[in-house]
Length: 107
Image 1 (tube, rainbow, N blue to C red):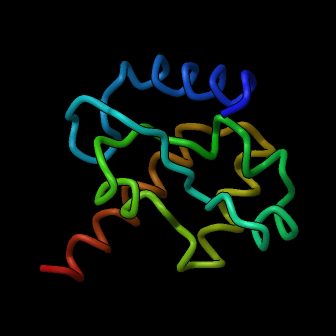
Image 2 (cartoon, rainbow, N blue to C red):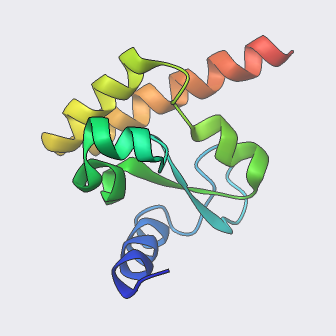
């Protein structure tokens, strides 16, 4: 992890008080909403993929997966637009709705 990535991770942890975005447990990792893939970097650009607005704290892999919006290009595009307009609260709302949909599907 580069120093810049460490700084961004620290920023995200501090923004959310080291609390998992999904369940409220202690966060141990940083999840990308729009995944860190070559395809996403090509489509959305590294600035969006690496943005602190594209990351949320997670307590483990299961909740990291719930935060991934990659299955929905419409949702990814909405988050991409919000990243560039710096609207963290609106991103949080969309991600929480997406988590609820995923959790209801698996129930």
